[in-house]
Length: 322
Ligand code: BTN
Image (cartoon, rainbow, N blue to C red; front, side, top):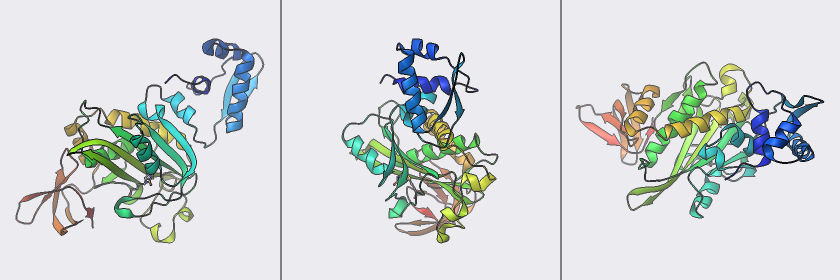
């Protein structure tokens, strides 16, 4: 897909330090008139960007509000498959549903949907996922089995997303995020992010999967319902800083693209380093009842390795830590 005029203009405006860029330089780069550039700048101002126009200097991004605009993400991440395929909604039921539907209509690997708010966001085990409007990042990305080293299980995609988001958070927070098997990211023992992978299998091979990510960014305590307040946190509650969600999304898309290139053992190794319960005695609720033992680690498929009381090793594909 070729970049639109807005993507190209935003790429210049978002260059490091947000420098002035002249109307004639933009017109030349885009092969259009200065009037056409001025019209696009007007459009971007209406979208919410505060762009200063100074005679003889050109245009400069004077202020960047907390808005989520697909063209900005594309402008900042040239060649990134998730940014290239991004669609942003003001409100939708669930971004996983959007990506699921588009996947069935042939959307390419990397197609992604983000919503400012979800009316029926869902979590694992049929739980509701509350998606406070404009506070967090609620989005889903499509992974297709391209055949080139992408033969992953749904659980290994959960692992991939957890490693990618944790690494992305390192760029924004002083304290590293920990991972709780199978799908939570924690800050100080409280949940900051949840991951929901919904996969379509082809016989026993993964055909495509929707990786849904919910990250609490600018939530204050009151944004969480009473019953979640002790277990949930946000980046803002972690260090008191309000953030532009687009900056966090850029880091996540970068890291997702990198993590997708990791081999299975590298990925499992990176996951284990972040996991807070490796080596600990744990209890796991599975469909067959509660299992107890020492968490020995995780396999490349994202399955939990549990050493039972008699020393025998068990592999659990699904479950919840109690
Ligand atoms: C969990 O912790 O149980 C997983 C939560 C996943 C929430 C995200 S928000 C974006 C995407 N759309 C959904 O409906 N769910 C995921």
